[in-house]
Length: 368
Image 1 (cartoon, rainbow, N blue to C red):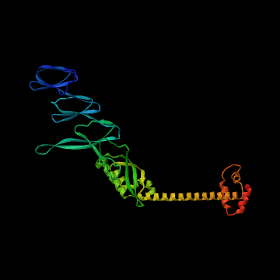
Image 2 (cartoon, rainbow, N blue to C red):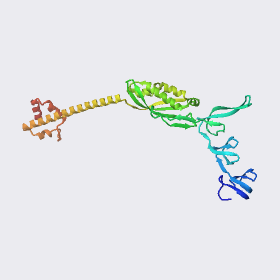
Image 3 (cartoon, rainbow, N blue to C red):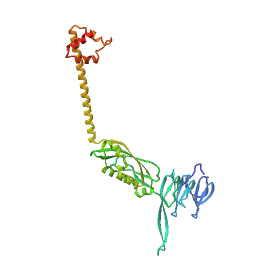
Image 4 (tube, rainbow, N blue to C red):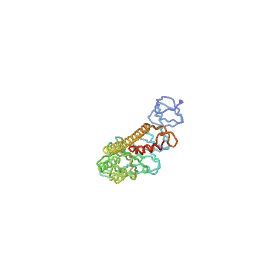
């Protein structure tokens, strides 16, 4: 009997004997006449010139199903929880498949159902014609597909990050959410009324409002990217300084807005993330900055020149006082009873009276 479970790899021809099929095991036995019998354990069976083969078990949980293909060509889907043994006499294959999870009422899948209809058309008298129908299944639910159904596989291009460089990757998915807000970040070039070209970073928010229009468009991402490229090449916004206000308007991209509606997308907002100045605007800004710096340097030079002139005037005045025998230290210490340098007002008065010796002498007498 053995300790471990035996599966499909165990097959024996037994002349005289028997086998114990444990609980949790199953086997098929062909007798000496070729008749097959399926035995599910626990069981003890006697064998006489017979072949015994154990079977592989397949289990589907509550969110899964078994896709069973029979030898007669039929297919059956068995929702879980269920356990089934692969009998090579009856089954071709058994596969464990996951159900399609739709979390909210806004999540949906597109299911194509096919059925055959019989029509009497002469000889042969009956002809089978396949018919297909399409329906949209909404959540919340776990959907188990029937053998005659197929779930539509959406194949949409990924959003490009640069407008004139489309992404080579394709997104493949089955469930479509009509409530989710999608965000598309894109960089594109736009002309201004000043004949400049600026690089603009956009954040486009949108949702899906029509599944039928999305199906008709096949790949709506390609269509809206082409529409945005058309508007970016043909639209002319106002002055470059007012580009944020112009670009954020939906009227700046009429073809893009119309295409979004035609493919089932609802445009919520166009937000300007950044605007890179054109080459001409950059050169003008650099030129203005240099002019401003030159003005600042000229002003500083004038201030330094004026300060040097005042200092020279102070020094000449002190030398003239010293030549007349005046104690210069008394002049330096006569500012409010505090020792320090001569104040700016005193220096300016000296500069004014430089060419008037009498006023200078009267100021000296006052200091004395």
